[in-house]
Length: 349
Ligand SMILES: [Zn+2]
Ligand SMILES: [Zn+2]
Image (cartoon, rainbow, N blue to C red; front, side, top):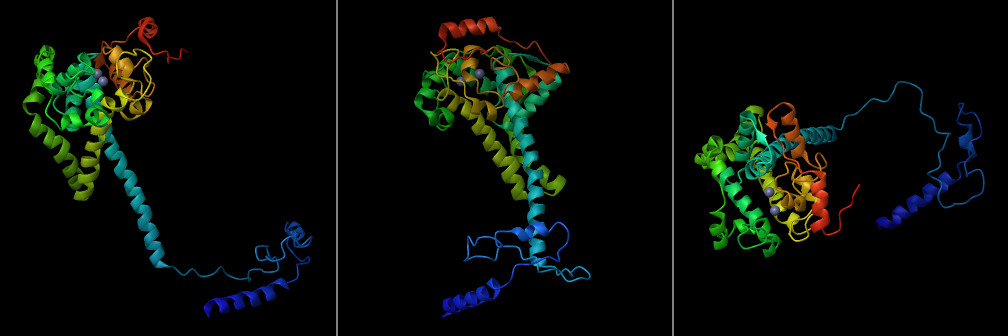
């Protein structure tokens, strides 16, 4: 039987090799020490010798061996590495869109239009409204109405994504069912006069559906196909669907995770919490206990550039004169609030 043959073969192999005598001299400089291996000394492992270097074996003199290419392996390895390089080029272009759409929500719909925490000149507002349209999360007018209602009536049935109804409802469930009557009733009373007076916001509102379909779904699928030969399916699934779904979920995590998991150092009487992971994903929007306590702070955080790419972006825009009048709560007010309503988790520096 084959197993028996193999056993015999290995036995006979061993008997021939174990008789090989250890080398003695005649080696090049620097190799002498190798001779003083345990094989000269005590026999601490008699059953295995074949991993000990055999200095008696030397290459034959002459030209280096001729290479015989194994084309199957070469082709596979080249394809694998080209594919990986290509993958690297795909991800950043989609990441760029991810960041761009994210800013349309965080710096645009949220910090600029919903909360008026800073002012932006027309070129920046145009940039943000395009990014916001591409994010395809409702037009700025509707997003702002829902969001102001969320802040004003937090944790009641008038809160569109009331986290008291559980993680799933606060995350996406609220978009899958009809609004609670209290949301409609209270939401319709929220003051929206500033947005009604802003031509750019009303322009987006008027042409929203065709504009969102073109910027969010058609362009990111068609442009990579025609401009740099991307396949249709790659364009459809990576910069369009994957990017869209990622921005949606990261935004929703602010409503779900950042209302359920984390400390409440600024106000223990509200559901929103400080959640570092949400801040990482949502470009700085996870400092949510602070944000509900001080909704007028342009950084949505006590800090500025700490895990907060949106604040960094707004500050860059301010440096080139496109953003101004950034509202920041004083340290004294923050400390007074912590003292008055915090949960005691605040670590002072
Ligand atoms: Zn907010
Ligand atoms: Zn909230």
